[in-house]
Image 1 (cartoon, rainbow, N blue to C red):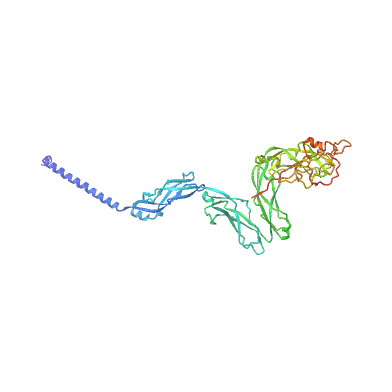
Image 2 (tube, one colour):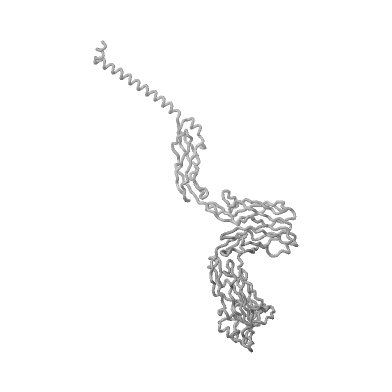
Length: 534
């Protein structure tokens, strides 16, 4: 019976239709359930726009660059998420927008993409704008001399001297963008001396001020502070500081420069003791402590002058710069006379051109600038009587220049003779270098007899014209011939050698030396180097 139903074509069709209907119903019932779930989830999601999110820059070299501007500085972000999360993160502080400047290698203006950083449960949709214009400016440093000022008044009966920086700082570096660096007016520190009865010593912070008087807070100052002393006392006197030297540099070095941290010091004491002080205070620098080329910082203690109570600062910092030297021959340096008498004419007979050559040492820069006119070479004939003398010259050198071999200075042969009647006397007040000619062929030598120099010390003349020494010899003048008649000691020598004789003012000492020819050993020369102050 069952087989007939199954084999019946009509029944099969009806069953197929029923199955189809059932499948359709099942499929649509599942889709409906899915639709309901989706709608339920969708109803819990949403979007939100977060305004005024600040743009933050990161990754650039703050030691080298400064962020001058960002445009824009705030943006809007559209986010998506569950309503509960959007409600929790509704504030702009919950969101970040960054711009990466780690790849910036030079100053300028550029447009860079923005990078959002959102809470984990919130999805990013969009951002407006999505880029930012960045202007980067390179930092620049300039040097400024710090100013130290006092605040308040010392105790009654006391006086305050000028503030002194004692740690050797002469200049400080101020770092800012170039456009703002030009607005810096000064770098200043303030010391409070209210009620002080003794020297005030403090470490003072430095502040950078703009031209309008405002403080530039983001300026970087190096060093940021300095050590300062303010002298306080009953009576004070300020004197310039000079440097003197002891010891010797190594043979391979020459002094190129010295700089002291102060150029004045303050002395305290009674009015009587201060009145007895000299014109300056001297700090002695030991050059023997310098062993190699370069700049060496030395701390030099200042001695309290006799009768004074104290001195401020009590020590100074001195920068000594020593360099390996070069050597140079300086030729055609004229020789002048010192100590010549109005009663005699004087002529250099050897060398015939009355000029010498010196081998000197110094820094390449100093030697390059050196000229013969910068060197004074003189022969001291003070107190000498008529005759012929071999005299070591005295040398005055510019700063930072020294003789290569101080023990081997040149000598000159000088012939001194009585003036003849037809010699035109030279006005003692006339110190002109041109000299005066005579009718007998003798002439006045070139040069001056003032002996003054702008730097350095002269080589000492170790001769003693007032004492007869074993090295002195009788001048070779023909028997029965006066010095005026001797052609080797008057006009013929001047004409033959092309030289002239200087007749300077009479500053010679009385001398009874009857011998007239002297051979004198050369003595050493040591240059005096500069004392420059900061």
